[in-house]
Amino acid sequence: MKNVLKWLAIAAASLAIVGCGSHPAAPSAAASADYSYKIGPGDNLNIVVWRNPELSMSVPVRPDGKISSPLIDDLNAMGKDSTTLAREIEKELAKFIRDPVVTVIVTGFVGPYSEQIRVIGEATKPQILPYKQKMTLLDVMIAVGGITDFADGNKASILRTSENNAQYSVRLKDLVKRGDVSANVEMKPGDVLIIPQSWF
Image (cartoon, rainbow, N blue to C red; front, side, top):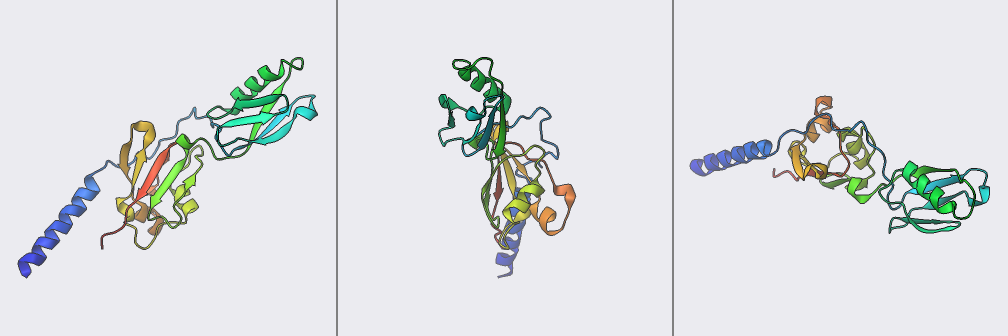
């Protein structure tokens, strides 16, 4: 019996060592200084056409990533920033009015699927979140309500799709339960936060 218990203790210790060392720690800084928000399905856009209030309106981005507005049918908005989309709307409106000046303001943020942050596993409320510039792991944990009692928080990892699916370890338990801000790291667009269940 002693040998069995000893073997189980060695196996558990080995698993703990393998689990901790399987992924490098996530870099604390990850945000890009030149990040520009990309429009995605579900976003709400306020289109303002200067001196043409009848053409100005709020429109949702449809699930196919396109928008429709007066004089414009099915213009692709997905993956574009607001300035690029405004120039494209001006080009379309120029067929009907002289020298249109358009401003596009994003008023409801969802973003394209490729840039959303996904939280899976033992989060209190696993969900998809829109990415925001300088968003941190702590911001994500506040949005999902923390981790469950069954979570193995310090074995959590970030799958970084923008870096060819590189995986980094993060210390959620230290961050959320112990208030260790040194465990806080910046998120990148498209990150997937994986929170495993504890074995014990």
